[in-house]
Length: 72
Figure (cartoon, rainbow, N blue to C red):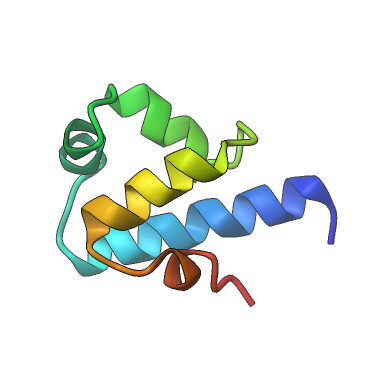
């Protein structure tokens, strides 16, 4: 799997988990103390984010980090 494909799949996973909880991009971004554009770039696979940022997303979604990374 290429880096681009991996980042896109990760972004799709974040969208899936966020929308399952009826959260908008703005909602989750504010929960993480970011602006919406930051989360938008992550969800679109435009940035190679850090493990800490992924941890913060999982924490705010109240899920284990391993569930966030379950991208098949």
